[in-house]
Length: 318
Image (cartoon, rainbow, N blue to C red; front, side):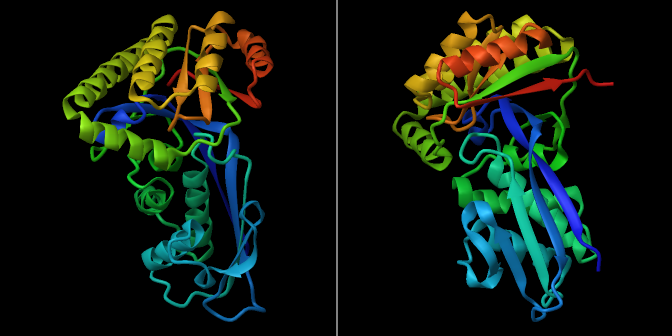
């Protein structure tokens, strides 16, 4: 059987993180400059049923998925894929997983790895799963990574397109009215998404009325941002980014480093900037007036302490 290769992009949340867990909308887009890759190949020297995992980034080098804890993300992804394709005892497979997506940085590394794994393994077994099935498996694995995930990471990565997302509702593709260039800057601080989500939940339980108001305010920003994005109103989009960041600060999910990078981006000419993802570290994003401004903005952010930057451009929808 020929080897089967699958990839999946990273992602950023433009608007709506944390509030999306509580039924508010969010906007997210794929980031194709980074990706996860999985390659499944035949392993005739191994016994039937063995799926040998090689994932150098997490220290796995030829480990059968059954030897890992059942709640290991890779083992769980394999088990759910085999269940979905109805392969109780598959032919032996070697599955190599690599990724250029920084871990714990808000770029969807865990979801991208799962999506690539599911597609490579199911494709190799001759039963490639449809997007909705891939997405469902990735969501189950996200529960290991994040506790109570919204589902936005696995959704935008599975479908690899900008999305307007509301938990539990049908996916809505997001139309882009004008080119939008975004600089992504990594704070260098690992982003403890599950911890941040749990802390917001605890704060919500202590002050449900106050946090419902915060979440609703985020929802208003998201809906306005969708309209601005579809109309190609980039300055308005930037102003809404600034407002979303202020609301995330009030939720307690920013940090001094992220706030400093956001302020530096604005000082360097960004239309707007905010943290992206779980917060407490990870990435922030900044909206540039033009694509030509991206290099200077990235340099300013690196000079301010960002450990790496990426630039992504959303092209107008046809």
